Length: 130
Image (cartoon, rainbow, N blue to C red):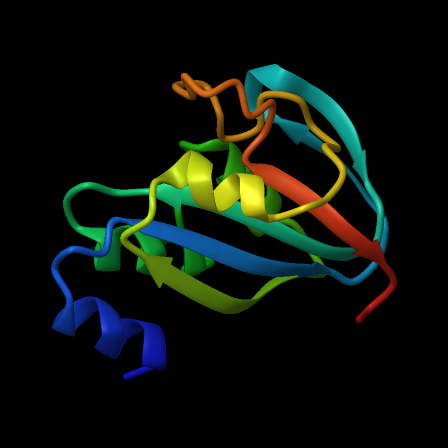
């Protein structure tokens, strides 16, 4: 069991997650109805929430075999894209997202239901394979 899985099992108040993602080489991807976007190689943070079944949601995101349902599914099923860490918190989704300072590559990504006008719940942090 990974650290974040132990944390989720021990604390039922956790409802928000942040995936730390590495895109190893530049990618051009269609993100559902949002369209086609260029993803530079580098580090990204994706912030989401699951009021019920947080553990199942994060496990699904990490699974390579899934139907593309959410914006993040289109990114995570692409070649040379890998989740390197998972952060869990009881903070609000938009609150955690605002703390991730980075560039918005895809406006509206993961933010279809965002009322705080975050712009995107996917942030590009840096170029390269950091």
